[in-house]
Image 1 (tube, one colour):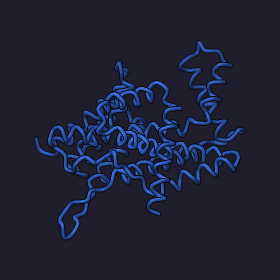
Image 2 (spheres, one colour):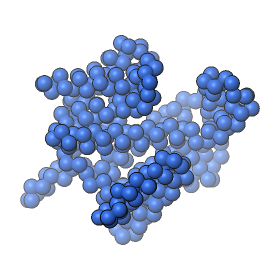
Image 3 (cartoon, rainbow, N blue to C red):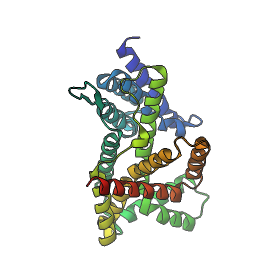
Amino acid sequence: MPRLGQAAAAGLFSALLFLSLVKGIPAGFVLSYLAPLPLMAAGLALGQAAAAVAVLVAAAATMLVAGEAALLPFSVVAALPALLVSNRALLCRTAEPEGTVDWYPPGLVLAWLTAAGLVLMAAGLLLIPGHPEGARGWVAEVIARTLEAVAPEVGAEARQRAAEWWAPMFPGMVVGSWLVMAVVNATAAQGLLVRLGRHRRPSPAYRQLELPVALGMVLAVAMAVASLAEGDLAYGAGSVAAVALVPFLFLGLAGIHQWVAGRPNARMLLAMVYGVLFLVFGWAAIAVAGLGVVRFVMRLRRHP
């Protein structure tokens, strides 16, 4: 099949995955999270132009089936991370005189995805209409109304408590999950291409993941502002800190993978780690991200 046909097929498959949620297909919520995967696979195998074709085909199919209103969520959920990963991950340079190829580091790809997520979140926070209790109050109100629509049998007081509990972390949680799924889809797409022998670049050594200093600076500044400021500024800074912490979660996981490498019970240890993450994600993720921060600081001390 010509490249154009392959890219178009990837776009149609992505649209099908994304629309599975809209059309109420069983497991549609899970399938919709995989919508970026075919687009990323097309880009990583065929190049940036193929990724653009796949995105255009997927967007057109999504609009024809679900209307123009679906274009924005599709662009955010699938198109943006796919185009960004396809563009950054295929960058390389040839080292002279050895002639070896240096590929764009995965830590920098992760940094670009994080920056895109922060821009999306900032735009969303800036578009929040005025509210007597600020952005946090508006978010709590929206959550309460959503709960009323999807779970009317729950009492008003319980819905309000749930909304007040979710509101402080909601923007960071939404964008953080977007970032996690972008990384999962990119890693899965690359792994699939390697198995099929269709990859352009070799898979990175994820255990050797390194993050740019800029991410640490963003995290430190956001945490400082969140602790010292008040109102919407503190709310926005706290959300930024939550998203900026996600790359350090992957850095912590890389350290765990590095630690268990070569051990006879490595698979069992990794299964236990990911099992704990799945069962008690919140506290376990914070602990792993904390490990990532420690590794980041230690590397800075070794290489100031």
